[in-house]
Amino acid sequence: MTEARIVDPDINVIGIDHNLAATEHPNRPDPGVPVDGLTFGIAVMTKTAPHGGERHPDGDEVLYVVDGRARLIFTDDPLPDVDLQPGAVVIVPKGLWHRVEILEPCHIVYLTPGPNGEVRPRDLRRIKP
Image (cartoon, rainbow, N blue to C red):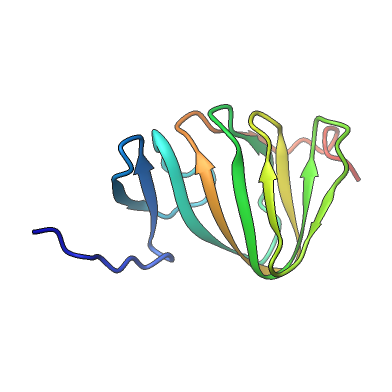
């Protein structure tokens, strides 16, 4: 018989495979553990990540801001920045380079497609002011 499991989001994220089975994976900074399916987790962010952006070629990413304030910046596209406050839900379109700039410490729930996510080093020439 299968039992319910309590997961500590500070330690693990949840990988949801294409059969909708959930498994635990170590919670680590970008790049996270690649999951062939979706990764569900909670990011506790006190400062902007040191990378120059990320993208998810496998599908759209969903972000939900529990508390704090942040700005979603599309680094290579002329899309406008999106200010995020508690209760905001945003869908980041498949394949677009983006980064989250922290304006106030945040808890952000994310659902990220994988396994082919990319993270690039910070390059100040490519980052919008």
